[in-house]
Length: 114
Length: 111
Image (cartoon, rainbow over all chains, first blue to last red; front, top):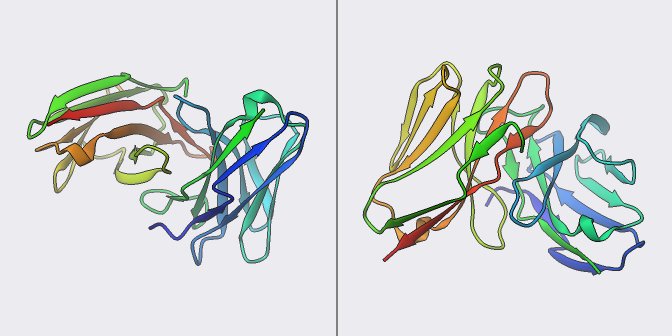
């Protein structure tokens, strides 16, 4: 158990719809990162939030957006869903930007776009 | 991840040692990690090594780092069926907010 919880665990959406995924970080962690893991691939960095501000972004289009709340929980929003957005979405929490053993992943949210 | 490469598959017999290899390209990597992912689950941090170290041992796990060749390996001693999973190598680089992951090595342990 890492103390990082994600919801929902599984969901199915239709192409063109919007989705919101949620992450509750480990107590005391002020940084949340989101990763997309397509089937058979390693996780790819989407973005990171530090103290409610976006603090770095990977190679993902603007329809991927996020929020971090004062309690450091976070949301990932994806608009205009495409079939290729089907993946496991992982949240990782850390203190500051995280090094060594301070990065903890949740169990992920499985998104299927049909 | 294009910067981190791993072989796709490894099969060993229960009780043998497993060695999973990884190569990375960025010489400024500070920490290198090994994560385990079981079917349908998230990522579990197994161990990590700081770039100024050559070796780290943690119970059945031994990590070897060759900075010159940018090669990282994870040795699992006395491999058990519960070790069957996908193992990811990842690197962190100063100034970059993300971990860069390899595509994972699927370890299959035969009874």
